[in-house]
Each structure stands twice: as C-alpha cells, then as structure tokens.
Amino acid sequence: MNLARIWVIAANGFREVIRDRILYVIVFFGIVLVLALRLLPEISVGAEGKITLDLGLATISLLGAIVAIFVGTGLINKEIEKRTVLVLIPKPISRAELIIGKHLGLSGVLAVMIAIMTVIYFAAISWSKIEFSAISLLVAQLYLFLELVLLTAIAIVFGVFTSSILATLLSFGVYLMGKVSSDLLELGKISKNPNIEAITQGMYLILPDLERFNLKNTAVYGLLPSGQELLNNALYGLVYSALLLALASLIFSRRQF
Image (cartoon, rainbow, N blue to C red; front, side):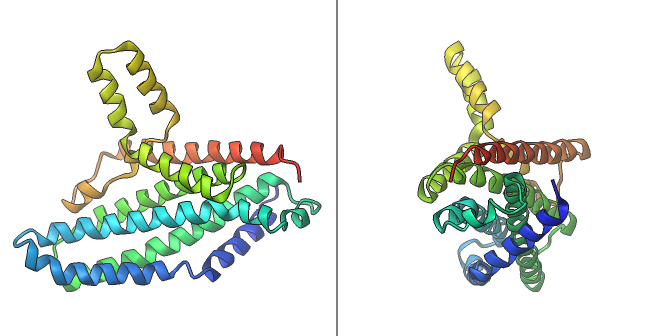
C-alpha cells in the first residue's frame, strides 16, 4: 500500500468529478434555499425559522446522498466500461489502492460541497435573522459528511461487481433501509414473534444504521448528543466504511479483465 499512489489517484478522481460539473448541485441548493426563505414566511406563520433550518439541512443531506450514490457507483464501473482499467492494472498500482484512492477523491468532493453549501446556508439564515446554534449545526454537518463517506463506500461495493444502474438501485435501497434499520429492530421486538425478531436483528446487524449520523432534529433546537455517543457513532462510521472498502477491494481483486 503506497500512500503517494493513493494520493495521486484521489487527486485525479477529485478533478474528474469536479469536471463532471457536479458542483452545479450547489447552485440548485441556493435556488431551493432562496425559494424557501421567500415562501415559508407566507405559509408557516411563527414557525418559519425552525422549518427553514430543518429544510436547509435536509436538502444538503439529500443532495449529498444523491451525489455519493450516483457518482460512487460509477467510480470503478466507468473504468471498467471504458476499458481504462486495462491500462491501470499492468501499472504498479494495486486494486486496493485504486479503490481507496477513488473513495478519497469522491469524499473530498463531498467535503467541498458540504462546506460551500454550509457557508451559503449560514449566510442565508443569518441574513433572515433566524436564531441558530452554529456549533450544533456544524457538528450536524460533520456527521452528515461521515454518513456520506459510508454511503460512498456502499456505492463502490455495489459498483465493483454490478452494472451502474443496478448498483445505483441497490445503493438507494440500502440508504433507505439504513434510515429505518433501528425502527426495524424495534418492530421485531414489538411483534413478539421469535422468527421475525431474528430476521430484524440480522438485518440490523448487516445494514448500516445511518440514523446514527442524523443530528438534524437536535441541531435545529441547538442540542447535541453526549460526547461519548458522538465518539461511538464516529468510530462506527469509520470502521464500517473501512470494512466496506476492504470488501470492495477483495471483490475487485478477484475480477478478471
């Protein structure tokens, strides 16, 4: 594992995604935010501040997830479909380095996107004189980034062995299930059926618990979970992402071209 080669792959991947005009997503976010600031005061008298805060965070989260899935599933698939992988394989680059480099490149793009949208978001709510806790919102955005890092790893895993369309559908399915995995666990307990409870427990262990990274509701009210809970959730996301990248590297190493 050579860090210099990984850095070169990540930098090239970063530039490639930027060239795909992915940052136009930021313009779309700005339009949504302007429309929200213009329309919400007319339809939600007295509660427009909290709704605007929540809407802004939710929009950043949704746009980030879309980019992570659509771009992430094509990172390796694009190399395979264009046959450029045949040029890379003979070079002194391991397939694990390619996977990690591509993941870091897209993670860098997501970090830039979230940072720019957060600046726009803060500017808009400050201009509208909406009360907010900057620290709570920043922590929420940091954990959103961890969620997108994990989601990118999921997209890469599916992208290394399926077509782009199927990988995208599977990634969205895992994303949606990950948002309700803890609810599935509770549903199994409520059912009082051992078979259903065993199935829901198995799904909870396999599926990522993405709600660990959802701090939007507490951030809107200026609250945060305990420091220990934040640390546990961060470690959960990083370890889960590392395991997924290891799985993707293993699958990709067994593919023949």
